[in-house]
Length: 548
Image (cartoon, rainbow, N blue to C red; front, side, top):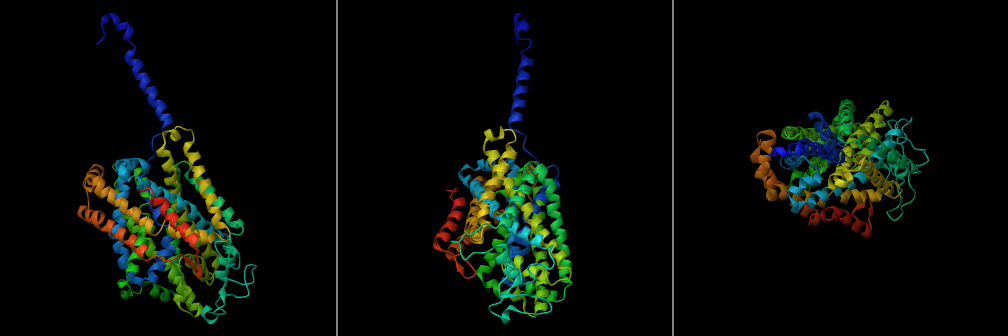
């Protein structure tokens, strides 16, 4: 209370105090903007679908299925998705949503394991470096698809050698008839696209066309992400849905081709004897981990943009099913075309199928060249691949940007801070990626691809993440947060068994398997030198070193 004699003196005090508080709030609002949220529930669903359904679904899964027992491979794959993939998705999204903050702030709940967040962000940075290189190759093929005839379907080009063999319906040649012969498609890939040198010691010149592709792609990614999720969430509606529609078009077309049944048979026929091989189970778990991005901190970030009471459990199940289903359906598109190619060339599917980049950049384009109106189908296929990779890149860039914004209040106080940070990240990663579009770039790419965000390091990060949340923080405590967010804990027993026991043991066992079965890195017959192997392991350590 204020004495009556001093009433006039203090009469403005409450008003003045309120005004000062309002001024402070306005100043804080200018300095620290309100955290963005998904405007619609479907924004989150489409962003996750775009992130999950990527390049690995359309070429990596079909080949793994073909190589590891065909239809029998679906048994370890679906089991891995049920006991590791989907539970991990639920755990990471719910953890981010309950914190309502970025990756670094979320892991402040478990300070002892905050290094897991750093490790995930470093892996995302590595992904930004080399993933864009794949998109530059795809762009090269897409532009070349407008040529008639398709440049990888004929010999006589400047990049072809005297050993070039043109495979077409009239010649019906098989590479098995001539051990020195090299298909026109393979020479286009190695000589024209890569300009492949003799080894990692020979860096050579920069491939100008690939460099231009990388720069243009980074400009496009910057324009799609520099305003945050409110901007990129609109773009992802196109980049996430259009590829699925195009894949279905390619599947329908492929299944109607002559010889498609032969390819589908080799894709799906079960070889149950392969299930006795531990490597098949590891391949299935690795594919699940690879396609869902476990441990990369991206899902924690995407979940943090949800409203607090968003039904993450429903969306996690939907996303997991979409991811597995898209991989399975993509196999029909790939192997129906390879069966058609084998029929036209009078050879077997095993001879025309190749792993890794060979499948998507040699075998499949070669089969497309045998179709009527090959330019049309080639453009559709490579646009599909480009969009699949583009929206995955959105999420990884957003994760890197969010790391710096959430880590420093000083950065958040700078005007146009998001635009500046996004530009710096795009510039830095593009400069490192330039090394991979040189004539020796494929060797540096393979080091990144096999060590930086793959193998033992990603499983070790996943093991630390699940142990930290379920054992250190406490799964029961996290289940209470489930109830606060969505009202109940569905599948509690299943999640408890998978997250507390099966997933950490499985991740650690696969980490040990990679160490025990270590093999020096090779491309074809080229064995990487010792110093390159050391660089690869240092890339793996560059992320996990933050955990201890």
